[in-house]
Image (cartoon, rainbow, N blue to C red; front, side, top):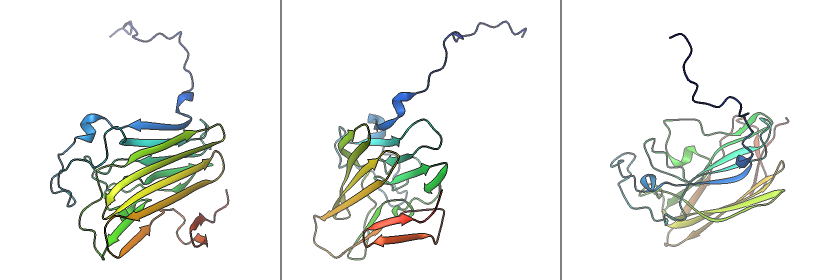
Length: 215
């Protein structure tokens, strides 16, 4: 009560910037998270064993240019279950640059894949079950000026989806989505990018999306 309590911290140790979070960081999925089954009936998702090997599964992948708040930062999700039950594995949760939000995923209640920065799949006009429990890491390369990842989602309503990202640090971010059908059917693929500037998005080529905003 007199303020003379023993301080558990050494105040002679100065704080250091966490440089180890710069670049690409893959955050692995824990075994309890991988085996989580307490979501029966929620969103039409029955408990099941992930079709991705545990060794490939990941929780998040962060892409961080530097520790400057104005630097580029974006986050890729690897998990499509859990308590909050968003079907968003392989989606980009956030993209910020120059203190601006370029891609967003900020609604706690909307769990469908159509509400996230990702691909939604219909086969013969239907999505008979939610997407698989998790995505997996196939390739990661973190070089001084450029970084690359390839993540995979297997048996997603009849397709195998690979999302490749090439990141020129401080520059462009190129996303390559490859979908290969492993079941016969007529497929509809809806690729969503959620932005704050509704109406200013445009396609500069049939396969290239951009946001026309100056910062």
